[in-house]
Amino acid sequence: MSPHNLYVALVHFPVVNRKGMAIGSALTTIDMHDIARASQTFGVKGFYVVTPFADQADLANQVIDHWTKGVGGELNPSRKQALELIRVVATFEEAVRSIEEETNKPVVTVATSAKPLKGAITIAAFKQALESNASHVLVFGTAWGLSDELIDTCDIKLEPITGTGSYNHLSVRSAASIFLDRITNGS
Image 1 (tube, rainbow, N blue to C red):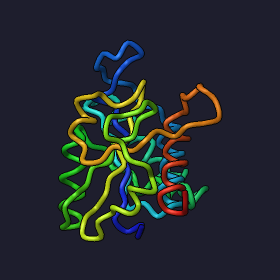
Image 2: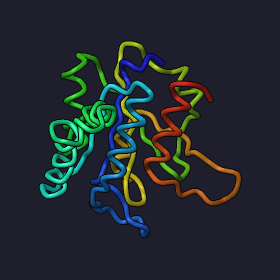
Image 3: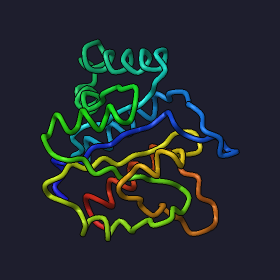
Image 4: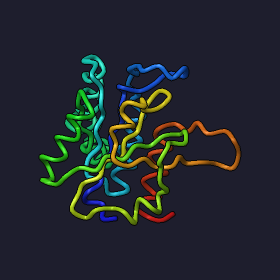
């Protein structure tokens, strides 16, 4: 896959809690740092942090400004480069519109989950099905994952990353790194 058409979205609403109820989750700044660094490493064009909560958006923008316009960027230029990929938006739909406007291409939305999803495809199948005339956005959920409502709107659903046993609860930043590596480098 050519990295020029790959984006990432980290969704904080609508996600679910451990009981499966739709909620909004709080921002975790380490997720921003680590997913931005993985995005830069694997050639992602943009990383969207999706939160409808003004205080959380303000926090995200403060972190971004510190590392891109403030002393953080002067002291750590590689971190600055990675955090420059982040765009903060209120809704997932806003992220998709932004990508469409930026690329002038249709956007294929790709849901990820730690749980098996009906109709999910393997990463290998996804790589074979990639459309060169489209942009693709990998959608990750915070808390206990994306809401079914959001998953159902996505064009493609990917099979979850699995380990050697039954335990399957990776941090979202770990899952994003693994998916990006497998999509851009190999199986």
